[in-house]
Amino acid sequence: MEDVLVKALDYGLSLGASYVEVRWQRDSGSAAGLRNGQFEFAVSYSSQGVAVRAVAGGGLGFAATPSMKLEDVFDAVERAVKLAKAAGRVRKSPVALSEEGLAKLSYSLPDIPLDPVELAKTLDEHAAKDLTVRRFYVNIWTTEKRILTSDGADVYSKIPRVYVFGMFIKHEPSLGSLQRDIFLGGTSADSLRGAEKTVEEESRKVSALLEKARSVPPGRYDVVFAPEMTGILVHESIGHPFELDRIYGREGAEAGESYLRPGNLRVKIGSDLVNITDYPALPGTYGFYLVDEEGVVARPKQLVRGGWATEFITNRQYAAVLGVHSNAGARASAFDREPIPRMSNTYLEPGDWRPEEIIRDTRRGIYVVSYTEWNINDTRYSGRYGIFEGYLIENGELKQPIKGFIEVDTPELWGNVDAVGRDFRLFVGTCGKGNPSQGIPVTMGGPTFRSRNLRVVP
Image 1 (cartoon, rainbow, N blue to C red):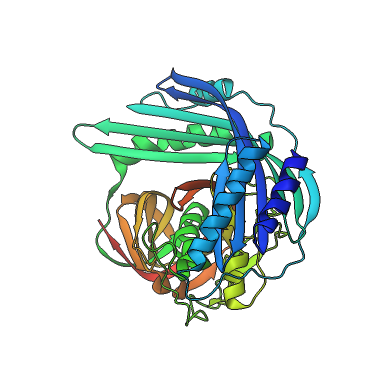
Image 2 (image 1 turned 45 degrees about the vertical axis):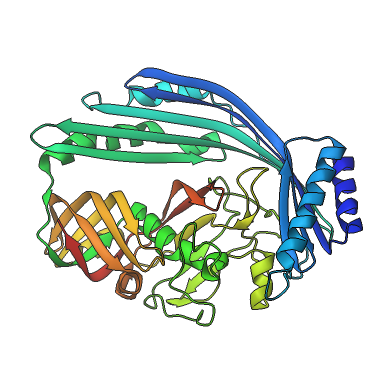
């Protein structure tokens, strides 16, 4: 394999490319699905191939092949160079890549000794049995990559991951339906510590909340968000609009745009208490990696500091546009997907309040523990988040469970933050982006926090 990849680099340069990147990637694993205690499927799978990117003639081209034969890899190199030259002819300015000190290293994590069939069965045994539908999907797989670039990167990585999706639905003709989805996972078996308890607790809440939760009276409330809510808010309203390719319009026709604009990046996003970071190298996390697909070593991306937008998720191409260094945001979900700026582990940093202190300090508000659905507009400026588990707060005490939606603009949400907790949790997700679509492993979260005077509707 190494001989093929090295020859591919040299061949791309001989065709006139100023930069060539080759990535071998193999994803292999097993998965199982369970519905109401009955197996839907169990499968093993494997896919591998070689991806090539080239800068030539002022443009950037990408091609891939599932074959490891030298002639097929050379064909992919030729296609990448041709596409780059064709793109260069219609670009207003040539593509450049930021200058980086690139990694030369090899790292791997231990395999995950779990069986998806047995894991699905075990979790199902802990789910409430009065549900109309209970489903589990378990996927355990390993991603191996070898990345070589013509300017010096040489990286091998092997990262196993486990992913659990649970769906719980309760339907009562007189009450309607309620659905709760949970996502668990990481890069080790320890990532699932407490999974049985989570399944038991969250599945039992569905019936209880369907019966007891009442529509919230519409109005403005001080809202206390628990860490799961913190995660989805950070991911959707900060993470995505801080991806530089989205800011510069590449995602406009595919996954949306950003409220940030190329000529106005230094924007006040929130109050002085708001500090938001994206950091791939957190051990055990679902979004873990040490080096990105361009050979850049991962570090914390300080997206928001003291409420100000300070850094953006980028690869080498978009870093060069700003005249900065890449912060290792280039990720690809499979060998036939190109690396683009993506999140990893994105979170609000803790403050100094105890969560219970924030609730006691709230006179009239809502405590939102978890969500059902969410919607956010193309620029990630306006969002609507459905409440799965939430409670009225009256004079610092939790009262009856409620249901409804929080409708909020991003500057209002983060600008009204006046209390940030010292607790901290991360939650698993799969982030979709790109065309063809790429679903990549991420985590998101942070502490409990409060935002004042937000609009809540039934």
